[in-house]
Image (cartoon, rainbow, N blue to C red; front, side, top):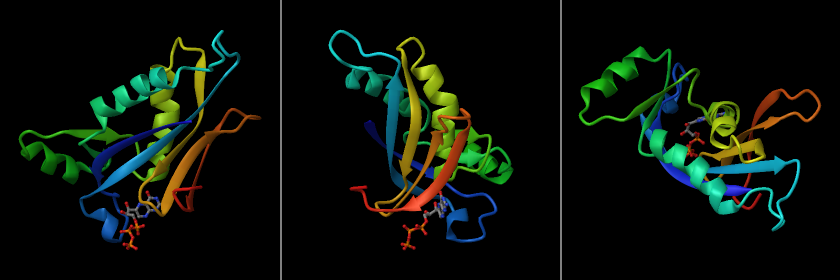
Length: 154
Ligand SMILES: Nc1nc2c(c(=O)[nH]1)N=C([C@H](O)[C@H](O)COP(=O)(O)OP(=O)(O)OP(=O)(O)O)CN2
């Protein structure tokens, strides 16, 4: 597992509560990877290589950005007025569940291509008390999501 920290703003489209306002989090993302074999040193993938690849993508696309839903045209228009502005349009609402899903399904396969390693689970800590994660079911290969409340020591 490799932990990556980043900060980003978002709002939950049609949430109906306080989280539909623009706000930000200091996110913690945990990447769980596996591989069919270990290298001569005994590694599935060098932790620093894993960091370079996944943190590189996050730094470029999400860190210090606003994450918005593709349905949230109003947020997009507002962010486009700000100069300079940095935002990332997601194909669904930017909940912690969906951020984990996006990283697992879309980002990791590209970022880890050619390494022999593959991500099986991504956990997003939105606060110190709550996380959501997406994982690949080993039987079906399908991505499953869920959210949980726990401590950072979990
Ligand atoms: N299942 C999910 N529920 C919520 C998500 C989410 O991603 N998945 N996100 C939010 C908001 O982004 C919100 O910022 C976090 O919610 P909450 O835990 O209520 O916020 P606080 O840490 O500020 O808690 P307080 O106890 O109210 O201070 C909401 N729900």
